[in-house]
Length: 66
Image 1: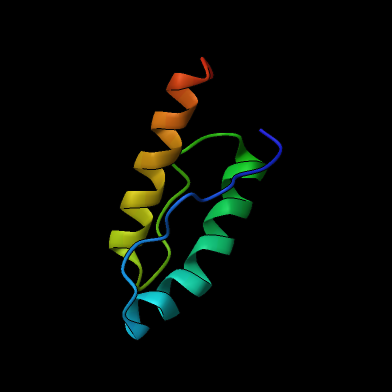
Image 2: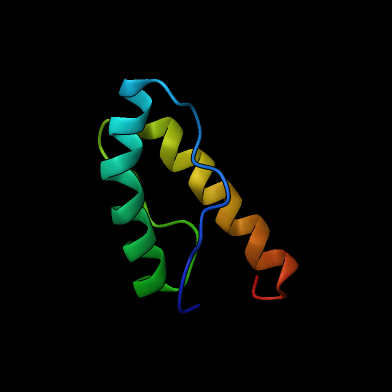
């Protein structure tokens, strides 16, 4: 994997957007570095982490990478 593009980024309320804003860049960098979906949790963003990891795992399976 060389890049991850989000098609949707979840809820639009300000708290969710704030969490997503700091968690997604961390998660994306971790996945790209480790080349796997399960990269651990971002503190305070457990739902975001779970959703992101599930989406990455699904995309990897569809691409034949998992």
